[in-house]
Amino acid sequence: MKIRTAVYPVAGFGTRMLPATKAIPKEMITLIDKPLIQYAVEEAIDAGIERIIFITGRTKKALEDHFDVNVELNNQLELSGKIDILNDMKRISEMVDIIYVRQKYMLGLGNAIMCVKDIVKDEPFAVILPDDIILSKTPAIKQLMECYDKVERPIISLMPVAKNETSKYGIVEIKEMITDKFSRLKDMVEKPVNNPPSNMAIIGRYILTPEVVSALDKIEKGVGGELQLTDALRYTATYHDVYGYEFEGKRFDCGTKEGLLEATINFAASNEKLKNVLKEAVSSLNIL
Ligand code: UTP
Image 1 (tube, rainbow, N blue to C red):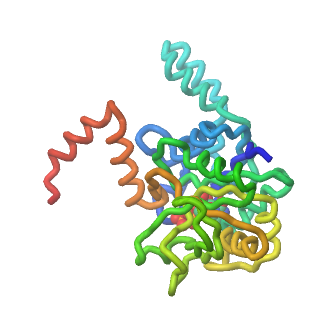
Image 2: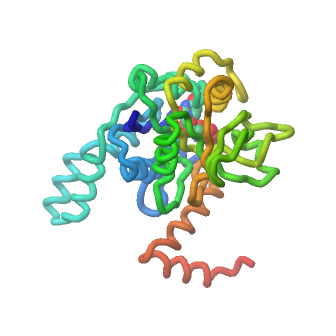
């Protein structure tokens, strides 16, 4: 079955980015000139996704407004002849069909995914965590969708991490390599404190099937007292193949100050207009 829906769990509080995220959703933080969420939505559109579901919470109004029409702003832009900007504003509000679902209590990523059960029904769907921004030639989610077309099973995006970083991620155990990037998985553990099964970490792109959503009903709360998506995938892997794909691209964790800084520098370096500004700014620094 074709993947036509992308789900964005965006209900979290973003505590690592406080105070920036006190009144503004983490996903609305700007990277160069666009909020993080817009990069994540453009990635899905470039991959051919037709429908988007945002799982939001109480403080996410700015995110909803960003993808809505702002009639007063459009009128003002038209009056002042700023037609290019006006067209860009219209493009954002016409990007794609969006459904908003509320997660009432922050009970974890797994619980957030459960909120879309009655919307996706028996369809497979993509999941994108917008604070993982990926700079790549082919949109990262498209790379996973292409794997899905071959096996029609859940696919998890993977990235190697340093051994001392494994406790920050979900970590997988590989059963067999199918190609040098594509693997069948044996197991996965959320934030292992001791003996991580490998150094391959789960990043915020997934293709999920209804089996994984059903597994969320069967598992117990995991790390941090939250319902963990990794645990549902682990449960699924006990009776149904689950695959991993080491995507091509550079990933930035924009849910942290360090990651956002790194992303800003990399995006500026690959932007024709900003490259020289970055060069000059760096050469005038005296930090070494
Ligand atoms: P994070 O672990 O990054 O949590 O969630 P967070 O609240 O966004 O940020 P910190 O850790 O407090 O700084 C991973 C993704 O899952 C979503 C978040 O919005 C984020 O996109 N999420 C998490 C939910 O939608 N609901 C939850 O209950 C938990």
